[in-house]
Image (cartoon, rainbow, N blue to C red; front, side):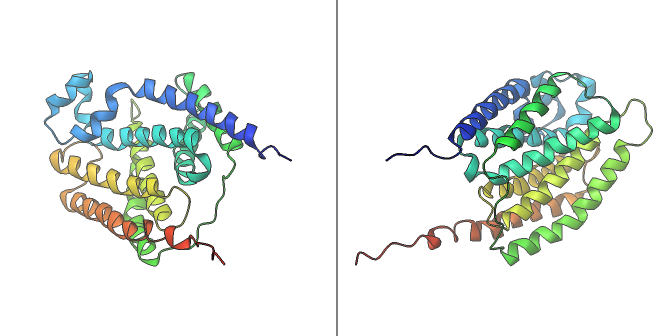
Length: 266
């Protein structure tokens, strides 16, 4: 007797919604996804992606983090269309990103482009349809957790300062500072996820490594850009991001295969 797999229709619906969302994000991002990888080059290089000249200096450092956040959103949603149960970590990261965006829109009472209504609706549908929104975190790697905790303190302070500038009474308001605060929160969450056994935790390690390293490099290259880290903190961000990769790589592949037990032929 055959039985239908429980929740199969729900998973199919989730994958369809996630695929539509990923396609929308890919179309919206256009060629700006290359920005974080060239932000260490001279300013004129950025003009090749059609940025207005007056916006280039304000986008050198902030753009690296914000576009990386957009890349994380695109990849995270695509993973929900591919293997949702095996990529719970990506769901958590995109929930932080889009959830904080929704809070900002509520506070400002301005959602901007109406397409965001569609994006938020698709996001809520992904969360509601996901078959494994919560997953066990243990076992926790103590070394990786310690490295994450060390970086959490300065990153939290940096996020606070960016939010303070975001909501300062200036005209016109500067929304880029909010994006930097989001990036700091994503890095902290990514490093914390990397120290756990959450399914798909590799994407947390990737976010906690790539984002501080590229922001640090772009800050060193353009120290006068808004939100740029001072040289000592830029080098510290690079070193910490690489440390996250080293300590998490040590246990990312150490667990999993060891848990597979081959049955005794007898």
